[in-house]
Length: 120
Image (cartoon, rainbow, N blue to C red; front, side, top):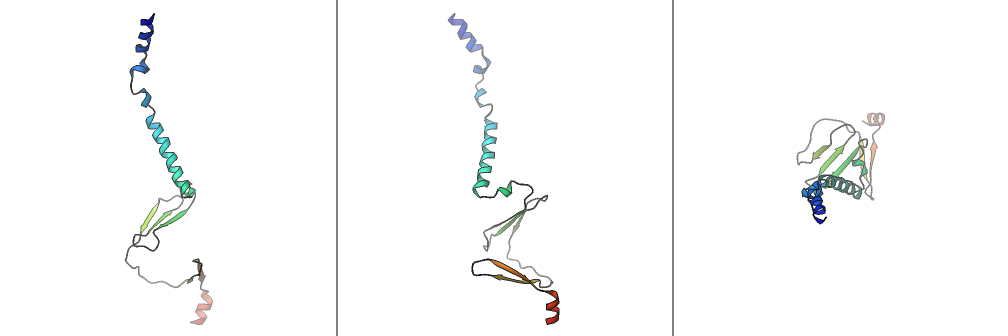
């Protein structure tokens, strides 16, 4: 009787294949990587990155030489704008004035086109 039970253990295909326990390793890795991505987004408090209908603009290293602006708009691919030392030029018209308050906020005051035409 002991021989029959030993044969059954050897004849069992699950025990002959050493990779049986590793079969779902890829699935586990994918679930772990998605969970890690979601945890990273939540730790930066930016759930808008996962919502396809949200518009988002991120500024990395503001005021530095390697400043980048990342723009995500609904229905458009994500844009990354790298700042350079080149100065833009061209013609245009003044639209208003921006003021920086003591607390760091910036207020934009548009010019009234009728008043500016009368003053000139």
